[in-house]
Length: 203
Image 1: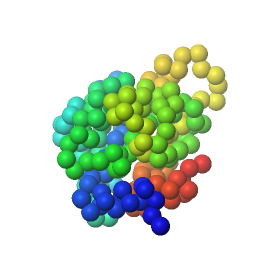
Image 2: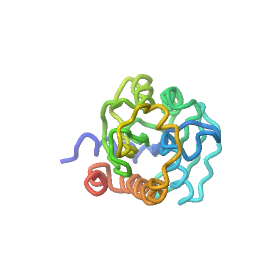
Image 3: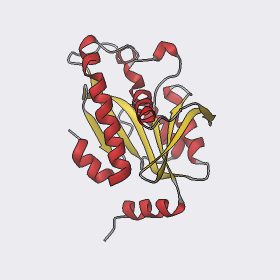
């Protein structure tokens, strides 16, 4: 017997709904390669995998698209700055051809050790302002998200400053592997469903 999520996924397939893979971050060169922009970085890697260009403007976001395993996939990078991400995501989801069941949001997470990734089908904001904005605008927490750990090995006196800093030398050495694993988790989610992706990549 199919679960509610599997039924919804089948319905979306039949209706030709797009996957919307939204990486959160802050626009502008001063924020490039900072911890808070991990969402942007994963989406950029996925787009590069498919030779897709993320440059079309829609609902205060940059959009790109591809077809993967016969499914339409759209990549989104909201340009609203992190704390207003929900305004862009809400606008995108209001358009025909998109559905909450096929939204996946990618964010950094101060509560997870650096490099750890966690897929979830739903959940609270967990202190993340981007997710809080999306929850407020969508009036729900029921959408998939991929969290990528950035927690340091030492206590923080200023977490806001920390997330806007560039990666340490140690982190930079491991960064490409973290991005690759995160991108592979998204691909697995699209092709095999979130339960299998969670089982394979969470940890």
